[in-house]
Image: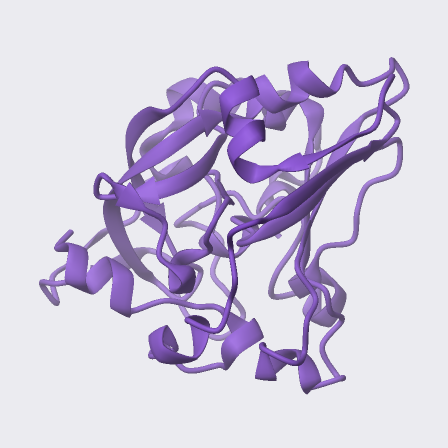
Length: 251
């Protein structure tokens, strides 16, 4: 996907509901950026995002497909670290089953957060099995450059087998818990935006089909793949979880 398209067509509701929020997002101050790791861990940590990346072993680059629930898609080269390395750094206790992630909250710079009908701050969650999967990634850059503010600087989640709303931006807190988090969009409308949110062309959004996706930068429509094409890496995470209702994994 052309860099210009991937960095100018973005969802970041903290700064507004339009796709063109680049200018507004520049108010986000990302240096320094403190990150808290807490909850069911042996030792709670608070450290700068750069220190977190350094302690996680330095940067890698991953080229991933990204599928938005709105039926558009892109392919993006991210740089960052595997989320599994943060989990290892946190040393969660045995009773921890989920990882809850939370973005910043500062209505003075983020006008969208003044809209109190939204459940701010933005929250997302994964099971620890998902969080330690080889594909789960914490991105700090894109196209070989530091992450732009509008794409979720300085650190965001990337889970390429899930719809894009799972990939929480500008993360400030990682909390290990034994209770499944209620995510931002799930809180607003669980029927349309469920916790699992795995890409599945056979489960339509209540208001549109998910069978195809529009590729950014081309206006070309292509068939959507189960798990966004990453089934070989992630399908086993969900074996036997919902034997009577496979749709539950995608709502």
